[in-house]
Length: 114
Length: 222
Image 1 (cartoon, chains in turn blue, orange):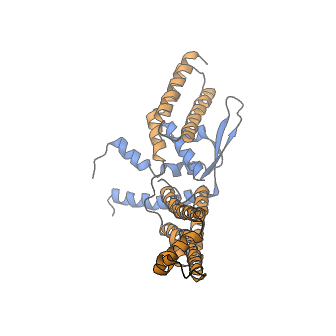
Image 2 (cartoon, rainbow over the protein chains, first blue to last red):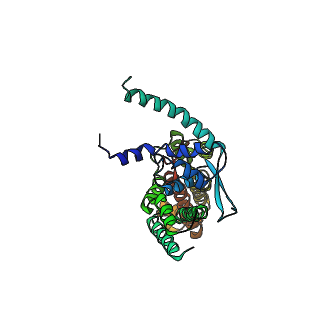
Image 3 (cartoon, chains in turn blue, purple):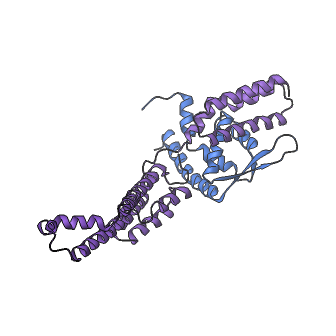
């Protein structure tokens, strides 16, 4: 097994899960992109460069997982708001199930209970 | 906005544009626009628009290279591992009509239109080029052969001057001569053209479908 630096390891772990985290963050309703990104990057674990979320959001839009709309803002330029689509809801629900199983399985092994 | 900050922002956006150069233009512009809006909105929210704020916003955004790398991850991969039903769609569209006339191709069309692997544009191209797949030029060929052979047959039954020495000595070549003269060269040229197009179009569609297939699944490009 290739030995990975810590940064690389996290990058690999994020791949495949981060987009679902973005979807999950929209479960509570429509959100402005900057706020969504701010939340996800708060702990510095899921997101380290905020800019990288934009290509991801663009792809989620292309894949029909989210919809976006521009809204006028009182102070400043128009802002883009994102909301989950039906398809996105289904995707994140499926992920949540799988993630639970996966996380529990990894935890068991890591803690030596397997 | 202080001009120094504006310059800094512009430098960053220029660097970003350079880093995104390899992307298709619409994606590049979309990401650039989103990042620009992000900076503008963050500045509007910030307590001031000083160079320190700008620096902080840009630092949190990450390097243009990081953003470009994230964008490249999303590029559609070449279609490895097409679903079985998608492979079947391609096969049925191409040669289904040869095995079971009309129905064979229709099966392919149904599989195509119910597939998640292609966009509307891909499906339209594959359906219109060419309805019937390779069966269509094959049918045209068979029709053409039958037409020319019947006219050839008809000609040999037409009264032939018995006393013509050429005919009497060489019946085969006389049939051949009659056959080529029974259709004008214009018709033959047109027929060949239809045949070539009729074969090229389904082959092109097949290539197109293979090239543009996306792996099915909730998240493509994973």
